[in-house]
Length: 113
Length: 111
Image (cartoon, rainbow over all chains, first blue to last red; front, side):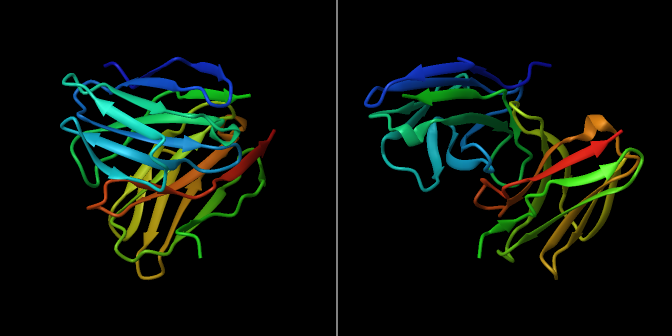
């Protein structure tokens, strides 16, 4: 049973650049949520995708955008990178919306210089 | 008041002891509750979910939920050094679908 996968594992960018992170959900799951985890903090919800639409969004600026593909995989795009965007970006998958348990991928560690 | 609060620790217990981790939440409409374990440099791994008041046991782990007191806890019996990690409490408000996390409690189990 394939778990949640993310790519790349690590990434280094400079301020002002753009980045795209990718996620494939756990087999049988159709919902993808993205979280940002700064050092020493709990994960913060960015947005959630279901049926190729953004269903919910956390308190993140429009520089953060995403997409979900027909095969349920998802991308997170961040434009105009800031130093403060350095964090671990986590993708979580679940089945449907609501209370379902979310399972996390290994994460992408982004460093902005 | 933060939505989900945990003591940051570190909580240090000797091997074989019971570790008790606590979490409070502010939103009474919260429906489901989760404990995740996160090793340093790794992603969160689900340990337990709990939806109803009372206790739920899974092996050495017991989750306890008290919705009236807006309190959820995790007990780890017979703690092992491999249990040393940060434990994240997360709350899902049901219709919203997103998880709200505490900052985590760092647990250290000493041999």
